[in-house]
Length: 124
Image 1 (cartoon, helix red, strand yellow):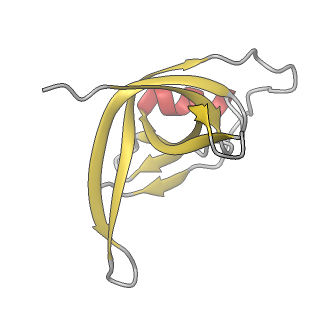
Image 2 (image 1 turned 135 degrees about the vertical axis):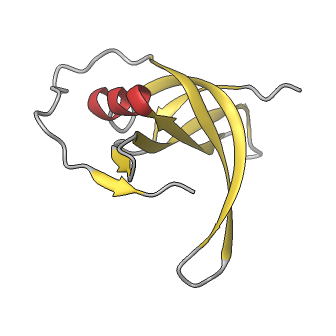
């Protein structure tokens, strides 16, 4: 069986680094990936693909990337579900990144921050 995904797209928002209760770094990003064709109005459309990065990849992405940064991701497609606060089951399909490459030129205004505030999240 093969489960491999390769994407090149732009971040839709600034990455936010979080930590699991075990102290593992994680960040969730969304990539805007252009489709290879135009719609009936002649406009390009995009797909918005949720991606999860772990450990060092999450830390580096959070530190060096901002909204609009072009990145290349390889990973696997994963589906999961959880029950939200209202008790309703929510299904999520996402790319779990194995590698990420920063493809944008490094902007002069991006300077690594001294200490970002970290949030703890649980994983199931």
